[in-house]
Length: 455
Image (cartoon, rainbow, N blue to C red; front, side, top):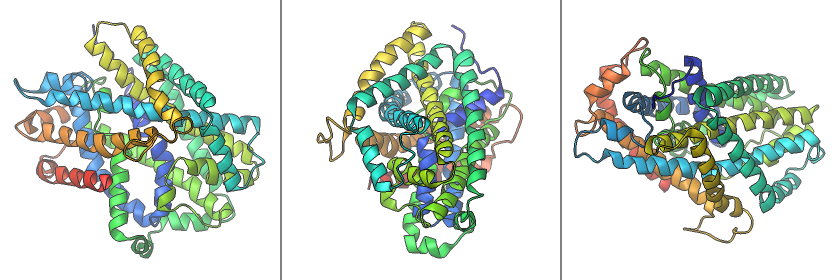
């Protein structure tokens, strides 16, 4: 069976960026920026994006394009006889399923809150603690969460069932364009608020004294972790889209474009949050202990409900969040579909139907961990938090380490094959002088990220 391809380069860029642009990127970046000193943190974060995220993404894309396969079989195609790199498939497949097991549930909360702003039921509540009770009522309702999560699963696998070009590419392009338009519109509005200037100063003018107050080591490790985890690199989520493109353009430029778009969304999210916080929340943003999805449904919802026209702002914001969530879910679901298409002889529609049923079952622990199974803990964590920990703190860094080692050592694919693949086509050339850094320094940084995140 001939492998599907993207219909356009724009489709590849937007879908790949959509996979990277997720809820954690959109809400976690401004929150963690507020917690760790503002603009100084942003500068360090961008530096780590270039040092960490860019080379790993290039490696993933190269493996995907060279093999023309997903992570389920890409290492099988490229490894030398008797090598064991193909065992990475189990990390990748498990990582994609685990990610969706809790991510679909969080996505359903965005849908629920969009509904609350559409019907106006939440608009009159301005106190953050009262909104916290509303959020608690949402997550503790198993029927609501099961219904909404299953809806997300059916809808997003339904998009994948339509095919790569007719479904995934066509619909994701529309969502991403709408997402970017909403983002810019909300940012412009937020910058017109009365105390926007103070928020923008905190966010855009570096003050290294604030970084010192937060602790230089803490800020650096937080920026390193955020830069690493925002791109979802290491479990083949990006490599699959490399397998869907031709060889007309070099991969350094493609990876740079994807990361730039991801960073643009993160930066613009801050332009929404900080002027609003300094206008309606007394300049209080977040502390390190509040970096979680609850910030959206309590603090930010409280801010929206105090604004003139806050209902419209809330509708647009949560519509933006739904698009951000769905772009990631559809991208990862497409990766899961590709596993099955490569490993079985089943048709795309059949694969999607099987995985709808499978994902519904797999999401139940995360759904129920906030209500019926709230007292059930493994290693001190409820199921949702445990799944998040395994993916973000274990599988992403370890998977990235495998990709880097595979591309840069003679015991894997090798630097010669890697550079030939990366530099095929037009565009910016991947410099050979970077290879010693990728081979010796980058693995050490990834190990540090892994150790710090686990600790």
